[in-house]
Length: 213
Image (tube, rainbow, N blue to C red):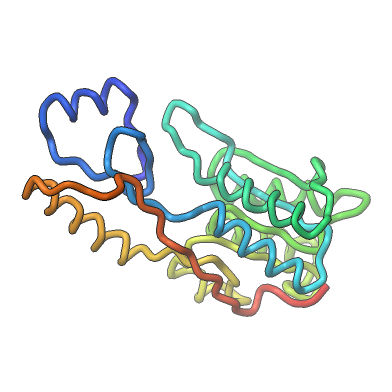
């Protein structure tokens, strides 16, 4: 789960005949099941655009090639696509990335809010970062969503506990788990797949952290 194997590791699985299903990770030679992160990033950004926002920032994780984490990059790609689709320029100063963690998200949000033209909305790579962004906005005396709209990703339990409740992109985690086990059972029964790589759709859950610009 969430860790993509190296080529030599994938080859070792195949040589051993070991039944393997990757969840939230990808390798071209193995069965994979993951969320469509690009489409999810587009969903979040389109929601903010429909509310009239144009200065939309993205706060994500710094890429870590050694571990193969790519979901932040894919969600950022969706963010870029949605902006381009709407004819809104992608502004480099509104892109922020750093090591994973709420404190880092707090710092990156403060940097964004200190710009001469700060964003009116933030799309955060995940809910934990979004909660850090809400805390940073409050520390600056800003109201969410009146002064700053914020969208997260994942729909973890904390998304409904934080105030205001977080607008976020929901991943179908239970469906991913059930489907992964079903694929694994089929592998154990030596069944063939029509496709090795499945992507499940995300859904936007609108709550209280977003509002018209």
